[in-house]
Amino acid sequence: MPTERVSVVIRAKNEERWIGACLDAVFHQDYPNYEVVVVDNDSTDRTRDIIARYPCKLVTISDAEFHFSRALNRGIAASNGSLIGIISGHCVPVDEQWLLRLTLAFSHPRVAAAYGRQTPLPDSSPFDKRDLWTAFGLDRRVQVRDFFFHNANSMIRRSVWERIPFCEDIDGVEDRDWAKKVLGLNCTIIYEPFAAVHHYHGIHHNQSSERAERVVSVIELIQKDQT
Figure 1 (spheres, rainbow, N blue to C red):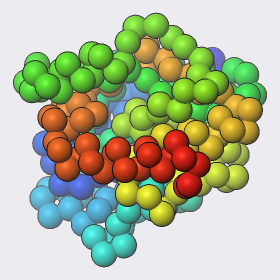
Figure 2 (cartoon, helix red, strand yellow):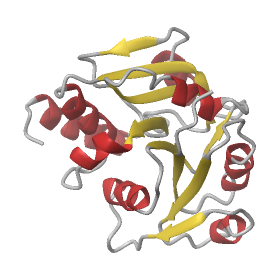
Figure 3 (cartoon, one colour):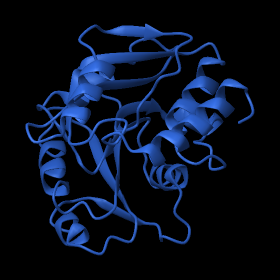
């Protein structure tokens, strides 16, 4: 079993519906050596009250300074693991081996990151179920050019992040921007379907046109190497 120190970083804002289930599952992992850092973005519901029940390190970021990448960079900076697990506050690991499955992907030094499967919940919308079932398949793969990557359920090497932190000059989709830059270093990314989480909404947020426009604008920049 791997023994590297792992830090699990969770971004959250008004996640009272899910954060308890998320933390319950995270704190019941079989992996022996990890810490949990929660980055809360000015939650106004019971999110922080629920977080306080668990032995987490709490990092806060205000609405005024919030940025998806900045929140993640701040959480990683407050952590001490050599591997950084990343999960959204509204995602729930499927089983106790989620963290171990991600760490096993790092057996080769060229592996810079791994990400896992996302499965819908019974009450997820049909659009979201379709998105998740289509985007996250059952075959493990090694990516050397494909920069699809998703921080709702992922893990990265700290040493690589120290060279390339998440870009704070783009409006989201920081995971794919980071992945493209990392692949340019002759690194690889692993998709590990057995490291699975339940995710209420799909990657397209129930067909949100605003989300689509934002994602497209950033990916166009990534493909032009302008970020």
